[in-house]
Length: 85
Image (cartoon, rainbow, N blue to C red):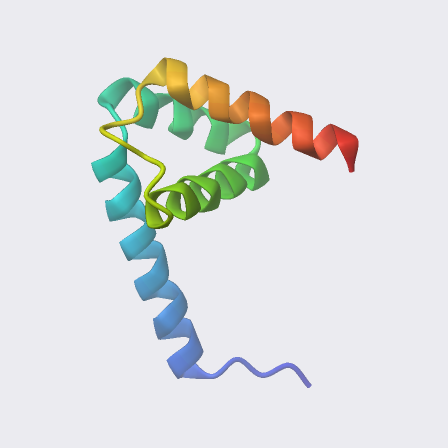
């Protein structure tokens, strides 16, 4: 059976909090609002976008804050990659 360990649940919750805080730190208000709208319509795309942003941040590729225009560009990159798979 697939039992979930309470420690695993706590780690997942901590990761979600860390992810949300980092995303808010990386994006402008307009970009955060767009991300919220994306999450309502396509939650799986929003999740992919957040993980992509974290990956870019960790690799040092993000300089400054991500604005709405840059976020739309990242969305284009993700959706183009998805279409080729």
